[in-house]
Length: 278
Image (cartoon, rainbow, N blue to C red; front, side, top):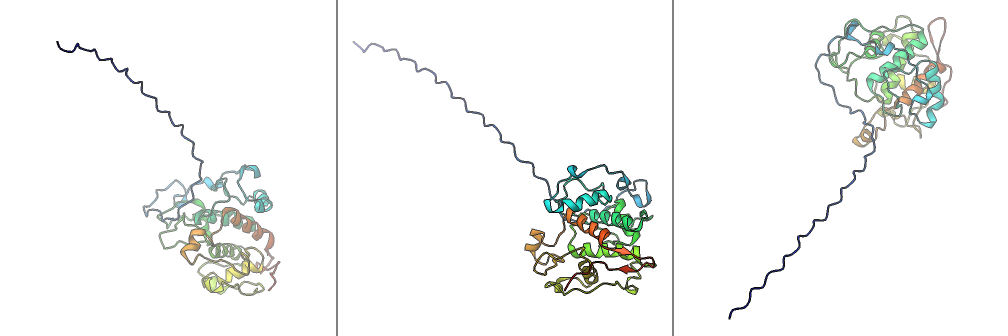
């Protein structure tokens, strides 16, 4: 007789263990840094003002010290910058960021207006294909800045220290020297006590040398320590560290010193008031 059939005991279905859902950890917000890349060379359309400029820079700025992100060392000079109206409304609240060519043009225009008591007006004809920024066109019209070529300004490129010195020196020349223009610049001399050469003098561009030492002599743009000026980045490492680039708060600090340290006499002659020791 065959073996009796044995009914198989059914295996209970296993209940799948639910996979725990991973809770995503929010990433911290990181402020993007302006990338120094050249904008496309497509002509920006006009915005209804001379040269296609926007009138945003003429808006009233009601911001107070509490509205800005700044370093501790810069507090006193930023307070003065606010009082004197030197902070362009086109610059956002984080003043620790590096400053671009367009932003420094705006600071230079504010400095020119504070020293001269005259409102700058934008160039009627905009020569630049990569910007219609009203402050750039004002700075160009006054003679504070020019483009990197006849048709390009490179507004987003970060500014270096020798460029800052040169632009602000042009502001002072425009205010203090009757008849000064970029075209006639070599016909005018600045009066100042020549300080001892910086250790990195060889890296100062020939077109910036007078401006660098004029600013240094008047304690407007000082060295970075050990008698170095850091006029421009000369290596990839320096460029990566932004060794010779200025921040917005540094730019505003030198604008404040420019307004406070330099005076213009009745004969429109540059006067040095705080010569730097050798």
